[in-house]
Length: 332
Figure 1 (spheres, rainbow, N blue to C red):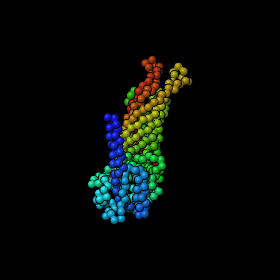
Figure 2 (cartoon, rainbow, N blue to C red):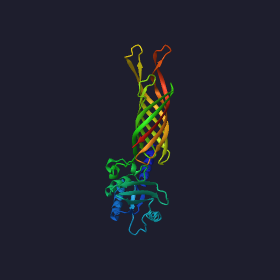
Figure 3 (cartoon, rainbow, N blue to C red):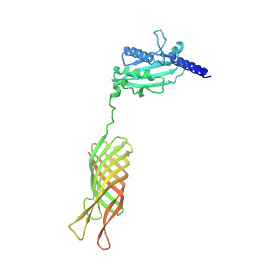
């Protein structure tokens, strides 16, 4: 019984290998636009050599007397059937400026939908060799030549750094109004420096602000370094936007001692502050722009406050701050 199973297994393997190895594929003449025809003939020979080396298909080249129109599916399909081929390959090489776009498609006969296709760009004719080697290695498989990571078939095109979209930026000065809603209702003022980067479909913000530069009790001084991102509504010269971000905040309060007036204790704390809001960028198309903003902010940490008690003394408490912030700025 075991011997029979072994024989059947060997026969099945042999039949599968024979069927796979003898699958005939017709190689149609390559379509070339904007490049030397001799290069087209050279690439066809390269394709034949690499597919033969790979051994997965028996490649049948077109003959001069084949009634084939370059790039015409119907005539190529007809000739492939006449030559007893089950598949055929069509390829196009099109020059665009200094580079050449190469396209390869593998079809089953009588099926207009390709079973495999890929497109690669060549920086120059030297890239044709690695491109065709990769295509020959992967054509008809589940992997694209584009995804082939063999280190010896990297093209010069793939070593070119990708272009990046340019952005415009504004750097300027802010005047700030700060309305604390909790723990106490305080109106504070401040100044700041900002950078706003306009990437057309998104804004990125970088801010440093200083609020309440005095040393009055119960009103801490706030230092904030903020990163933000905003979504602009359109591309008009005056563009509204919404978004939010995070700040690294440093708060300082001075505790003056009535009994020892010549001493003062500095109470400080720091942490993260979250904020959401929006605004409008005025004169966006110019080199000088105005920036109007309103934000709601909330601290994720407590801030020391110094408060006067009923006995006319001061005590320190830790409180959570949230509120609104308004600003107007000019950027260049």
